[in-house]
Length: 79
Image (spheres, rainbow, N blue to C red):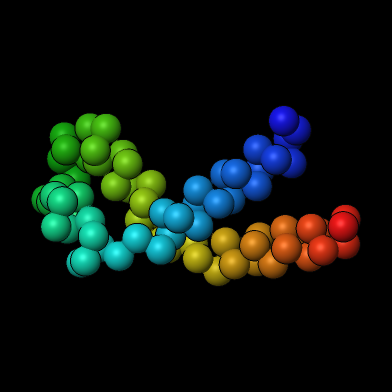
């Protein structure tokens, strides 16, 4: 397993997180961003950290699209 394979796996994981819909999937299971309330102690919890990561990945969808394009073209060129 090389570094490039690890990068591709992390990119696929980021793609999977980016397409999660908050209203249809996350909020029904108690993982909505509104569940945190304020910026208190709940943000420091593991659940708060994971929710923050999910929303950060969803917010940065344009760089994620650019990385997907770069990886797809490199896979086409390399064979």
